[in-house]
Image (cartoon, rainbow, N blue to C red):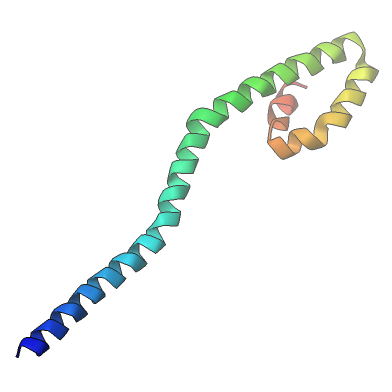
Length: 94
């Protein structure tokens, strides 16, 4: 009887541990994604918006001063600005 109870208890503990391990592996990615999204919206978003406004102000000032030079700079910087997502503030201003 003792061996049966010992095997049963070990089986139950292993079953609970394995279930918890599978649950934690499945939820870890989701929780990490939620935390990363929250940090991005709260911290990174305003910083990139600030830099986007600075770049927009500079490009608009150059366009007002010398439109040809502004077009050259805007065309040269457009690809990196698209990759970083800052191009949206430029398109609203121009």
